Image (cartoon, rainbow, N blue to C red; front, side):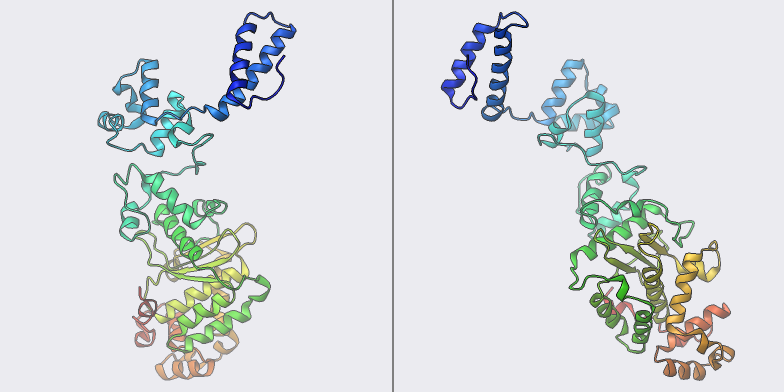
Length: 403
């Protein structure tokens, strides 16, 4: 009886010969047990030395069509159109992930054949996601995703690569795909465009490793007041970016996408590093500092607490009063304003009761902040955006960041 592993071709031939002699063994006999053992030994040896190549996907499709008696028309429900079927079978068009999944589910072709990888499986689905609804053309135009032929058909592939760059482990990406109660968003916002922008911010942050790890205990409202005083300097926004990096916080500037109606966001990377993203949708000094401090207030007060990993903000809603009452956003507003202009000082300031240029400049000098921040508060409080228009610093921010 042979009872050892097959290690050579000679052993292999001997075992095959013995199996042939045992083929007629009756069940529940020592010979039948020996036959079962030898068959297992042969399988182990063949798996190692005679592994079969995985068939090409198109060959596997054609084989399955033949088995099921399908013609090209029979593949239309799984591939999309008769012309696409013809192009796929003639290898003139690549299979997309959605086609592969459909053929796998409906024709039973193993995923590992399509992926050309033993034990391979399709990526985990993201619920309720229509890949073609992402702003693929605009993203390709900006260089966010690689140019791909038939971009609409290959939307999932393009977006999967994009997602992997911003969230390699896939652990926090769901934050971008679910409604967040902390959001201050316009009712007309395109959620796919908004999600794309948020993921772009995450991807850019991933590329820039910070020397300092963020410690929430060492980043408080006192730091926000320090940052607010940087507004006093012409290059204050760049100094603020440097300050934040030293505290383990990313500041990313990226133009908004159409239909996002977005000014800024605060979010967490997979390693819990905070990121502030700003669009500079309105290129004004007052807008920059309020938006920055508002998002930083979210980091101090809210981010990472009660499963809140993402805040996105359209400040026009605050200005117009169109948004619903939101305590979280109101708290961030209050801390941002207090960091620039303490209410104790503002309540008795001449710039409040008589907001002329002289009074605004004197208060700015006293607080050591940019006059635009005070002018912006006056305009907002009085809901009069014609006031002090020469003090708000229009056209001064984008040039600093070269966007």
